[in-house]
Image (cartoon, rainbow, N blue to C red):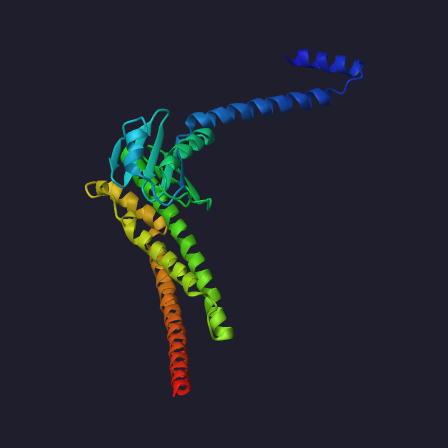
Length: 305
């Protein structure tokens, strides 16, 4: 091999060709091949499930989805439905408008979203989504939870349901946080008007519409309070219970809900203030009407006597 390389080197020099060019080119090819092999090695050794949760609507009709989906669910209830599908794909749909995908391609996800939108009451266009990843490593003794992934020693439908449920809860809280932020921003505008002008220019009709919007958000959150409850399957399984508890802590589920409840209390206090101001304005208007009517009655009496 050494003699062969020397002969090749001599021929290249006689032809006026820089042998370093061929050496660099050969080295580049070897690096490319090595990278190619490394990529496939990693792909073979990688064992993870990609999860993505999206807030698609305010409410889904779970009963109709289950009847027309075309596959038998792994488990279901009046408020949620969980599917285990081919190609290690999983789908979790919640009646509060969140869909969680596992191992779905962009095209498959788009098709599924188009399907579930047929059973939605109000479409949400806030681009609320959250991505997460489940990594499987049979060599670890217990679950390891990070901000963007969880490593588990094994995975089964129960583990998937716990992880996907917590991601769905996180996205749902994102949606309610966005709604309450909008309500607080609106109320700040009226409060600043009271501060600078000493009165509210909002009409009674618009104020009542605002009150209705606040109550609708409040009722929606109250109706879906169960999303913070622990699923039944964690009660008889200590490992699932710990996984669920750690995921709730990772996504700050309970602190975020307390903060949400606190913000709604602020909005309700503002509503009481606005209602009192409106009542004062209405009573003042009625007083002026009564005064005018009395004045007219006196004038008429004077004219006819």
